[in-house]
Length: 138
Image (cartoon, rainbow, N blue to C red; front, side, top):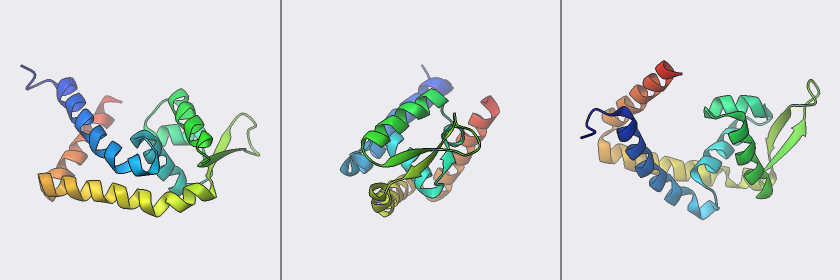
């Protein structure tokens, strides 16, 4: 019935992937969205909140809510910027830095499992095509 429906098939895929990433990040006490956001903060410390939202392809209010959760967990700090008092730069805490290698390892393990299940060429091609579709619709 929905063989040619982009919405149905991508949503079904997203639910399957959500379960995979939830299991991967559960030992860290993080949801997949929190873990991916923290990984960006760890790779790009001092990123502005607005830039982080763009990087994550989410709205600013969604970024704010996710950052609130990470801040409550003691994993990020918001610091005022010198250039704009309304904008915050996001910095990882020492606790976040201690999680970096583990988060990256957990993420890498999921990616390896998926590549093994699908085959590396199909995995890479699928990711590239999904990115192209997303970019074409933005």
